[in-house]
Length: 165
Image (tube, rainbow, N blue to C red; front, side):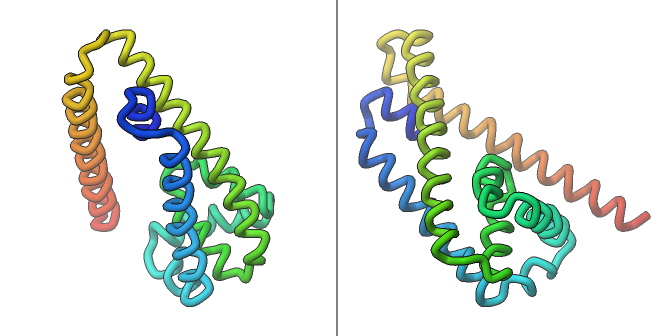
């Protein structure tokens, strides 16, 4: 989304940003797909968190087949496990590539557009004060990062308490 924001502000070009973001996502997911082919099941069943995500992803994969790639794309925190699972279960590489690229293009279009709209909104709210955009985005990034860290620490503490009881 931040890429779309910077496209709107004129700091990035739309087409190269789209291509590089798509290629980055594809390479990332191919790595996990082939990791799944190599040691997938062993890795996924190793700990409790990935074991739970493994079961959920496997249900999705069994129920929706290739369409699960599209569903998984929009589920936060679920992209790694299904890619490893698809590799581990012997999912067809050709099908994986075709549907994964298609889902990445759709996903990337949605996220870049949403970021572009936020860029337009920021332009309307802040006028021509472009020098403040970076500060605004930086502060927003720091707030979100700190919030995520606090949330993860809270989850870990809660998990330890459950294990100790």
